[in-house]
Image 1 (cartoon, one colour):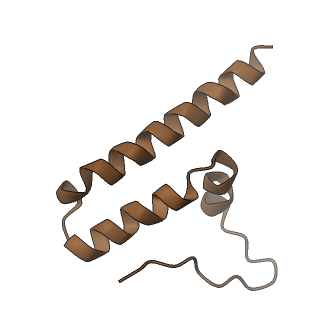
Image 2 (cartoon, one colour; image 1 turned 60 degrees about the vertical axis):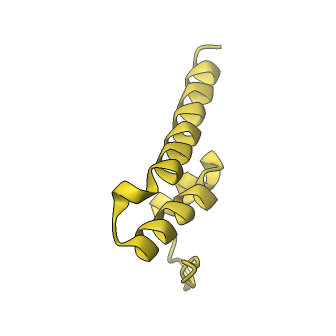
Image 3 (cartoon, helix red, strand yellow; image 1 turned 120 degrees about the horizontal axis):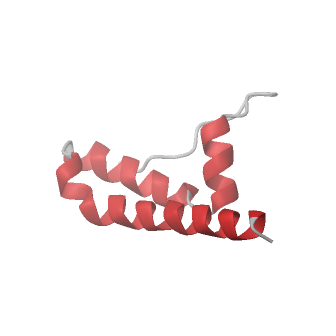
Length: 69
């Protein structure tokens, strides 16, 4: 089963999805959700979780570097 983005209604912005999209990590977030939904066991999704973690960490470092300028 593929996890698809939810259908947005007018003025129905999910702040988490907005942040993840801005960070460039939204697709990885969906991959984690899909894996957990498929396997029913987050422990079997460590590759997806780690890829997502790396993406978020990289984004945080980039934001900190921008703020330090």
